[in-house]
Length: 411
Ligand SMILES: Cc1ncc(COP(=O)(O)O)c(C=O)c1O
Image 1: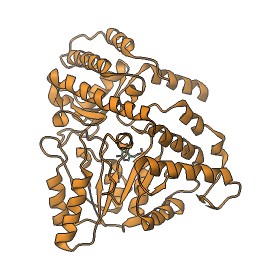
Image 2: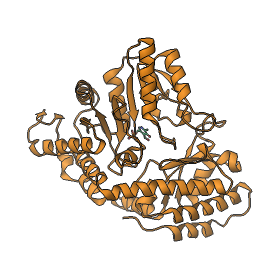
Image 3: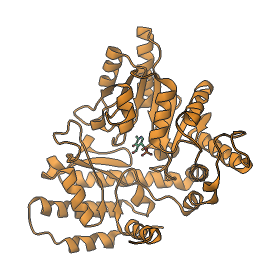
Image 4: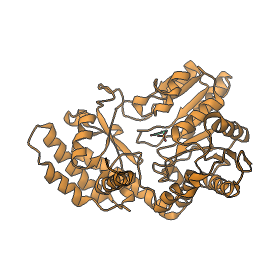
């Protein structure tokens, strides 16, 4: 059996060689990786700055306080909790801080792009709360009218907005106004307005996607997708009473000792995202995504919502060439292109097959890719998959070489 070091080396090689199109992945900087691997992992620091259950936290306090300040500066808000170990635990903290079991949660249908923690029946969210979901219009755009109708019809204790696979700008203001209107015209108690910005956090940080503030009451995120930080979660708010409840729920409510090595890495990620280079990077991510989606459309393929405003899009492979998302994922793996199967809205196929794949440009843009490489890649993918779909003999080595020549070495 190989050693752990050997296996890490092999994974490093895979990350260098493959074309990474998974929309939730990225390559963080060596500075961030060093913090993740630092001696901070040795320290227990249950609690919060100046209120810890362990001694020797003087530097840990400075690190966590700085990370909180940088998060607030980056996202222009007053309070942050940087301790959630991942995006799902950040979300869990919000449910547990503000809802009771069986309360109504209005969230995006998973088949429309919502995340597991937004109400899947195998997740705590779908098991402990009463989930009502809104979907997409036939054009693949978030159905604001559906959201409004369901809010008025069923009421909600929390309106949850955010997605894992949605390629258009989300109009947080419009949803904020729908909630206001609902409260004013029915006299109902205001539902908590929660935004999970995990996927578009980098775009929001760069000012290239509208911010959920001042509309949302609470905002959760991951730090490892477009934000290009370490794997982790984040919670933001402008409300002092809410942050007190959130802090108590994160610790001791659902977590123990914070991962201070990851918190330092999150802080570095916030610092990096405040630089003008990061804005240039995100701008390129979006331009690349648009050029990539447009090339598929020009070649006659179906892209959900007919394009993208952000770092990703959903390619409907089943209705384009009759291959399921699963078949496409497996076929592309053979030529070192990594994607993930993804359901389309009202998908006729089950999740493990799926009619589409989700494609993102954040990771390869970090490797330096521009529109030109993505356009050529679309041509390669289309030629290769057409061969597979029509059962023609496909020269895998040939396509592998085309892919290799396009690739550039990562950091
Ligand atoms: C919108 C959204 N929220 C939350 C999460 C969960 O993040 P994690 O995998 O860190 O729990 C994801 C992950 O893909 C996501 O897309």
